[in-house]
Amino acid sequence: MMRAALLLMCACSFGGHRPNYQYFVLTTTAQRTPSSTASDESQPTLAVDRVSLPGYLDREQIAMRTRDHSVIYSRTDRWAEPLEPAFERTLREDLAVHLRPAGIQVPTRTEGPTYYLDVEVLRFERNGDRVELWARWTMRSSTEVLDTGDTHFFVPMRGVDSNAMAVAASDAIAQMAAELAVQVRKTDRTLAARERRP
Image (cartoon, rainbow, N blue to C red; front, side, top):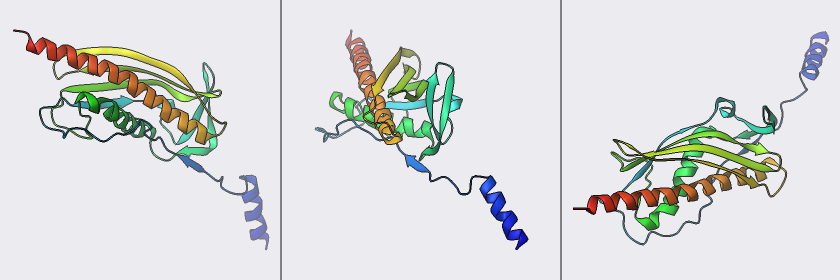
């Protein structure tokens, strides 16, 4: 009887019971359209080669920035998968939608792609009633850097909970993909024109 009472006291002292965790995922939001032409080996390909996130985001707990130098983590809300590969997959799928009309493929895996894309994420978290995405990117071939740039914007949340945050985070990646697709198409046209010169 005394042992049972001690176990009950210990349970209470540690919060009584485990929190009811909720899990969230990033999803592709770009409008998917059927491919008008079959893909072939002559089409240029883009590989999302490397995506890196800051260490403070490398955890299950969903982060929220409260000040420039302050971040807090949810006690109950979690990412359902590691954030870095989830970000990479979502970006790749969004890019594929935007670049398909230009004849540029973004496969899951490819040998010897035409272009490589590296992304260094600096911030990707809730900031008040918005999600902030700030990243630096580099587009390169196998031999040279072709283009670099920054993307930094805020996406309003349509709600106050973590589900609204996950939706806004997915929208932020989609906006980044649309912005990057413009640069990829521009670079591809420039290189194609250079190759046609006598």
